Length: 437
Ligand SMILES: Nc1ncnc2c1ncn2[C@@H]1O[C@H](COP(=O)(O)OP(=O)(O)OP(=O)(O)O)[C@@H](O)[C@H]1O
Ligand SMILES: [Mg+2]
Image (cartoon, rainbow, N blue to C red; front, side, top):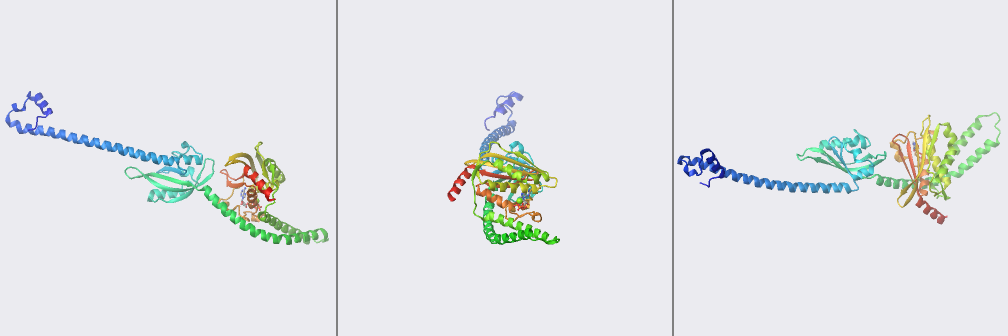
């Protein structure tokens, strides 16, 4: 028999008042031995269980540490990359948004966490294409790469190229998605600009050639018509002078198109001087004021009185502002509307920019024509005398000044046109032109 187990000893003492089991009757012996053995066995079992528990808790600790470390690395990565990262739960509510997303959009974490992503932050909303893609991902576990347009807090749109992955819990059930995306807005804009520039150059070359050929015959026709109208007495005949007037109008319109084309294609004759943009804007408006008053179009001025001078061609800028004011007014309904003109200075890379924003309360630009508004001859006003040369000429003039033009729709309706004149570049341009001239 193994040594008497301490627990057995205690029980014998308590119930039988016996210290030594040998003092008990011999027929009790097998029974005592089996109890003693059971006590020893349970000791051994306990030790084994304790040891394995100790091991697994150590293992658990190290797995935990590893998971934490992985999580920390992933989080550091997501917090520091120049990529947008957004985590959604199964219902499409935001569970995570990384600092780059917050910086890009101007939202705070409190603005986005828990909010329905598709309704609040994606163009197209719930039911839109991106929402459908999300549902497809959740249902069929298919991970597409896709693009969509998200909204900034100020309403500006950014195009993002996304990669999405499913998130699962420890049981393997899907609990949401994590999407990482690249903001490709500027890249696309640059690509589009290069295409536009190339297209504009080709068209301008072609149009310039044609315009040159047509300009002189038109001048001959116009002079001839003016001569007939002034010199010939048609007596009672009212039809011939009316026809001649119509012809004169038609030739004048053709002439203005030809002039526009030549503006686009001719090497620029620039007369650059330091100017303040504010009075140029006001003078452009004065030229249109009568027409605007008649049509109940009011201007609201938010001009920065401390605007720095920029080196520009004043006549060409008049042309820019008149074109833009006309576009704004032509987009207004019969009831009229408001054009807001705002000037300011902003800091830009390597200097300052003078910014002019012209906003209107008109119809806005239909999204399907937005990409074509700078194309020569593109117009939605063909029946109303539009030539489609206004914006191409404006863009050309802005480029000649080293500036930029951007047009988008306002959230509240109407168009928003932003012109930027980089002060530093303009000064260099002036020197460039001085050298050329
Ligand atoms: N402020 C605006 N609101 C709405 N649509 C606009 C606005 N500005 C431009 N557009 C759109 O862009 C198109 C091109 O404009 P653009 O000035 O080049 O030509 P146009 O105004 O049609 O003709 P033109 O300027 O020769 O009279 C317009 O036909 C119109 O559809
Ligand atoms: Mg126009």
